[in-house]
Amino acid sequence: RLRPADAGLRGATPATMESTGNNLASAVDKLSSGRAFSMSAEERVAWTARKVELTKAAPELRGLSDTAIAEKIADRQWVANRIEALKTEYADWAKAAGERFRAEQAGKLNERANNPPVLSGAERTMRKTMNSEASRRMELAQRTKQTEMQAQIDALESMSEQLSTPRS
Image 1 (cartoon, rainbow, N blue to C red):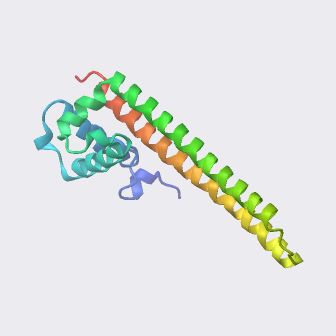
Image 2 (tube, one colour):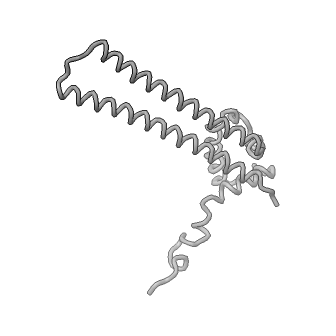
Image 3 (spheres, rainbow, N blue to C red):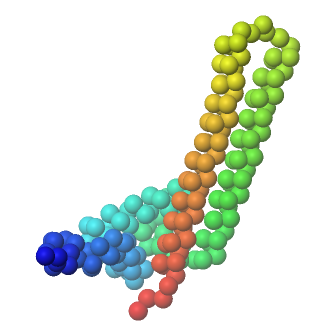
């Protein structure tokens, strides 16, 4: 005989399943309305975790109080400027990393041209493997940096949306 999950399984109610982000939302509500003292432990943990993400995205938020951070994030223009700065920072990093990689590869080519080695087949295979591994590491570093940047932008945008909506 089949029963609905919320009737026979403790903790599997739809309200429990939907409430995964409620702690952060209620923490944000309490902070923006000046009731930070009334946050529960779960809300405090959710806010602290998000605050860590926000300080990675915007180091100038370090050392500010919770309400000062909430006010800063509620300013859509500041968030838009910070997101633009993050994108520029990533583009500069990617350009510099690409230039370093190309310079490193050019140096290896010049070294080979000036000192033509007599290589065995195994040595040639090893060099090709090392070059492809260097390329793979460079791509991995770029993907990692891009993922981190996108996570920071997402954190800023989501908090900005939560804080800038009118409170009732």
